[in-house]
Image 1 (tube, one colour):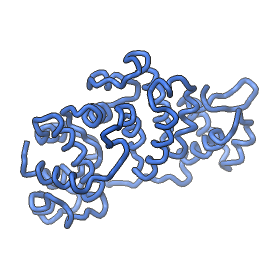
Image 2: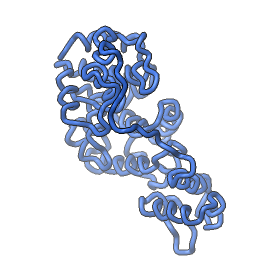
Image 3: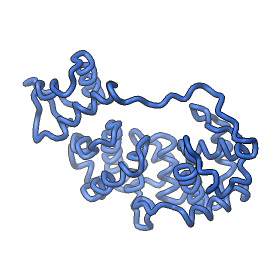
Image 4: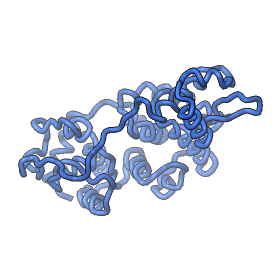
Length: 290
């Protein structure tokens, strides 16, 4: 552990951390798990109202597990990537069946839950249970790439070298390590941002290898921004919106009117069915999964 980096970043976090409900002292492990799934590829501002409504309706895994998966998809609203709602529902059922309704504290048990990958298992173990794990999301990877490796952006895919670096920086004390994990993440979200880093506000600017080297431009594979307009993903979102807003099953013409490109619309509908997000009924109508 290198206190040259950790101490200033921990001090910065103590003074600048956002007041988010899943970081509150009374936040439950379930609330942390829900937040981590919702925050994947989604900004905090969009997640906050959905998370709050979700936790009011389903304050425990058992409460969610008792309802059809379609209700999770409906409550997901427009957060995007709605398969995450199905994964949360599956995890809620597994937590209820395997762990007595309590989110497990073991990293191995978390990793064994449906749809929970290495990042989410480490994040929940760290943030909910104050354990010592390397938590590598996009923000953390970018901070470490600049601070230690001197590169503007990390590799597209996570490498073993990044994991080793992150583990080497972890404080030995588990609660401190957990606070460090979220502090680096917050620094990447608020200061060491992807496009316009606010280096003047960085607590470790004097130690930043990228800055000391003159902030060399990224020279790796092209970084393409995600498009949305006109994509199958947008089409899927339009179709799901009709079903979310409906009180019951929906006839096919009500879906057809929301997207003019018929082949793309049918492809998107087939994909929603294959993903378990839409159920086709025998009478030709469609509904959220029951």
